[in-house]
Image (cartoon, rainbow, N blue to C red; front, side):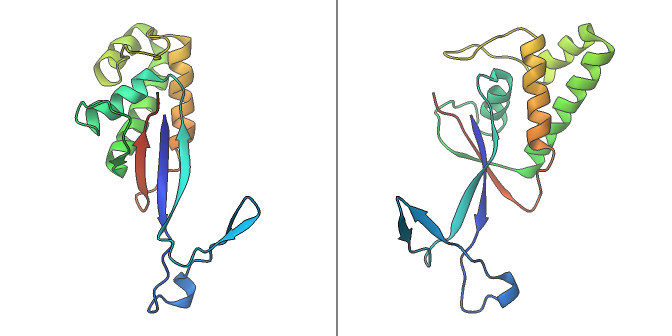
Length: 150
């Protein structure tokens, strides 16, 4: 499960010098011409078997369709996911029983092929903490995409 961001790097004749991108790329020892490059894609977050996170994207971004395609994710939705995860972590530390109810409502687990554990316990909380770390620096000025691969 991947969250990436695309950075626009196209240089136009009218692009001011201070806003120009400098991009160099080699693959297999060969230099690749990047003059026509428009975007660079960077990994922002990576999850493995975090079914509650995947379910969030399927339900809120992919309109319920789980097809391993790449989908645009708005900053608003990423920030919402971040805030939900922060709430889960805080509530888990205060009252694990209420935390389970909160999780079932806002970030439920989902069953499926290759989806790991479905309990609201240690593995769930590890995925929540990992998500908080990975999303803490998201920016409203970036363009984000989610894709799963099974």
